[in-house]
Each structure stands twice: as structure tokens, then as C-alpha cells.
Length: 224
Image (tube, rainbow, N blue to C red; front, side, top):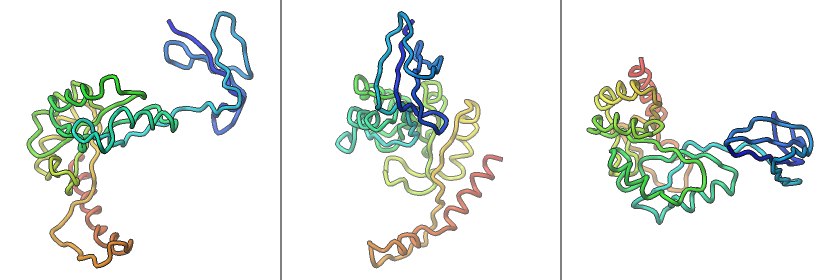
């Protein structure tokens, strides 16, 4: 059993800033006490005027390890997160190499993260054409959910799925009561020829609203 307390003159709770002593036991907050309270037999850490606040959760992080660690690895990503007050993050499946679409690839990712984690970290699995037989294994191994794209992901190893692919994958994901995150752009063969790469208007026109509308309609239909 591990217990301790933290006091701050600037503890943020319920949109207020207060002087509070936060009592922690076995990793859980069990009590909030007004002021700087000395509890006999319990170590109290006094951070004075430093801010004490709930950690931020970021569920959409691209860490890219293994395979593309030069872009960002677990060591630097989780150090940066904790320095900025992010105490939990969930890592995306497409920028690692191999991409996290098989149990074996997920095992490779877990091995690459060993001794490099400085925050709480969870993982998304990926849905790509032909990997429906990997979904149950990924769910059992502990992914928090799955990510799919309806248009090119930007990573050739992580191709977009079709309606047929989703019809195979979604019942398996539902069986494990996990969420499915979908990049909702159902692209067509029509492409706008941009003449000015610095033009925001041309960029918006290159991603037509109908792509998103059609993608959302498809996902509503499949969920039903």
C-alpha cells in the first residue's frame, strides 16, 4: 500500500483555484482537504505556488516507433507530453513501420516502447483491407480501439478501407465493445488542380465537403 499527499496553493478543481491537500492511495485520489494539512504518518509534498491540476488526456498521438523513430520516438514523445501536463496519451497505428494492423506488429511496437515510457500510454489498432482476422487478436492483446481511413492515409502501408472491408471488420470490433475511429473523407476521382500551394481557399476546395458528407452517411448506415 502506497499513500502520500500533495499540497498546492494553486490546485485547480471545478474551475476554481484553491489551496488543497490531495491525498493519494494506491495510485488513486481518495480525499481532498482544504488548506495545507499535515497528516500524521503520511508524507506530504508541498509544491507551494506551483499549479496542481488534473493531467490532460490526448487520445490522438503519432509516435512513429518502431521504424520511423527519427520522426518521433516513445522516449521524446512521452517526455514532451509529461512536461506539458499530458499524463495519458493514446498512440495511433499508421506511422510505425510495421503499421499496427497485426498482433505481431503490435508486439514489435510494445517491445520498442520498453523502458522509454514516461506517461500512461494506450494504443489504437488499425483496420486495413484484408486484416479482419487480426482484429480479435489485437483486441485481446489490449488495443483500446481501432482506426481506419476512407481515403488515402498518407502512408502507403496503411491503405484505406472500402465498405466491404468495414462490413467484415465492424462486427468483430463490436463484439469486443471497442470504438472504431474513422477518417471521414470518401474521396472521388475528381481532383482540383491547385495553382497556388499557399492558398488556403484552394486547399479547402481540394477537400470537397461532399467527401465528408458521403463518408459520414456511409458510417451511419454501417453502424445501423
